[in-house]
Amino acid sequence: MRDEQGAYWSLRQALFAGSECLRCEGSGVLRVAARVRLDVRQLEACMNSNRHGARLEADAAEAAVLRINATPTFIVGKSTAGGVEGKVIAGAQPYSAFEAELRRLAP
Image (cartoon, rainbow, N blue to C red):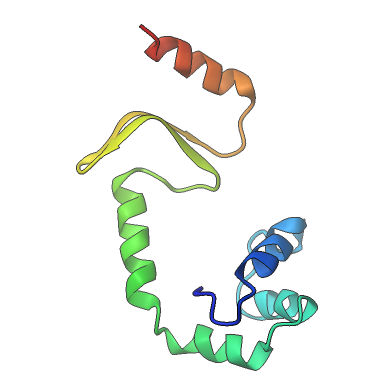
């Protein structure tokens, strides 16, 4: 979603704040948007218009190339034009998951 109403961060924070919207779509997003005082009709029109669809598809394609399919996702190593050189760590992980990979990469 582009920040057409100047409220991207407050909506994002509200969406991630609780388990209510971990996988919500459509009406669930609109309920949360109403709580943070967005113009719900404007947001719904934006969602239904698909005017940002090409950008979303391009972002999803780039994520697929990089093997990113979870939030959060971390790359320990580096990304290249052809993908990722290193390890992709998906999902919320303990520090030990990162530490092990960083130790493996250290000279």
